[in-house]
Length: 63
Image 1 (cartoon, rainbow, N blue to C red):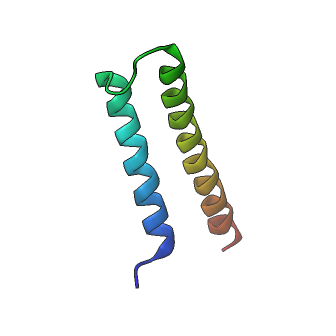
Image 2: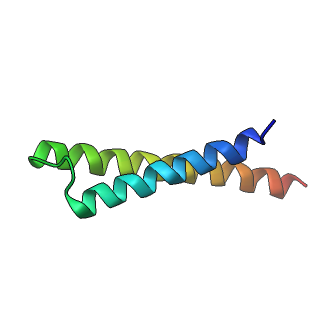
C-alpha cells in the first residue's frame, strides 16, 4: 500500500501542473469565464498544498 499522504501530494501537484499548462496553452479556454474557472482551480490547488505544508510543519515542530 502506498503512503496516502504522498499520493495526495502527488495528485494535487499533477493537477496543478496540468491546470497551469492548460492556462498557458489556452486549451479549453473559450471565454473569460472559462479562464476564471481554471485560475480559480489553480488557486484552490495551491491553497490545498499550502494547508498540507502548514499541517506537516506543525507536526515537525511538535517533535
